[in-house]
Picture 1 (cartoon, rainbow, N blue to C red):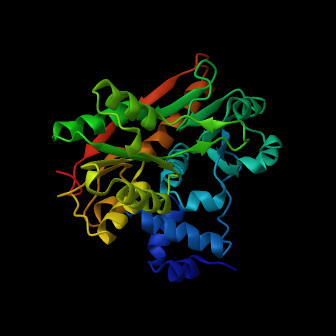
Picture 2: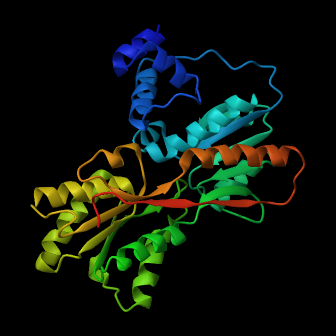
Picture 3: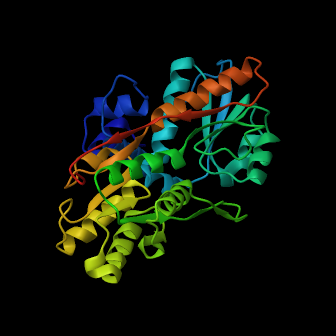
Length: 329
């Protein structure tokens, strides 16, 4: 039987830290990496928390578009989930986590609402809407006239990054991004960052299609595409690279380091998200901070508003913050 002690030994942390992380102690300050190690250890050991009291007045399902394995590899969505669960703990709301493939299990529950984390197609959103009227989307808005959502304006975020880079005098700026598709295979998801990059650069006469590389939002993809850009462009390598997220940016930094290309002296690199490791890698990554935990918290608050009678759909945008570090100047 898995115990907190065994989880602590596997994760290499104290028993007290494991207990507080698994109980979503809002006063505990630990890195995302430590939290991830603890959740991974708990999952591997098949740890079962004591169930939430059954007399809570409200119960919601938290539905994830990622599989469990994918979520463990992406701190962005794990952090949104943590914000949801922490807020539910504070408010005494029962919650249960489901991945979209297990959605049928949620249909048998007595739910007052659903918070859907990730990118859901319109058809998937409507399927959720058949279960309960109060469906809140975190990180995507499939139908802003019907469903509440809390999102980041990634188009505006991209412009903020590009203004920062052009303000530093950069004219040749590369873009390395990713392509996502809906899990129901209904189509690809247009990326606002790439669209904003194209529009911004074209409006200034700076767009070069040869400076755009698209793969997936992973470290490996960033590494592979940065190497390809280095090979393709040679001495014409852009002076700055805008990466679609921090994972891609980390892969870019590795490729540039292995190629002996100095950052930021020859190439500036900037990402999006500000995951916990961004400030610890070398050079420390300049990035646009996305407030993921507050995104989850706001999603719960939107559910409460719906539960208290609000009928009109609401779409909430959270601000981003540019964090300048040593991968750019």
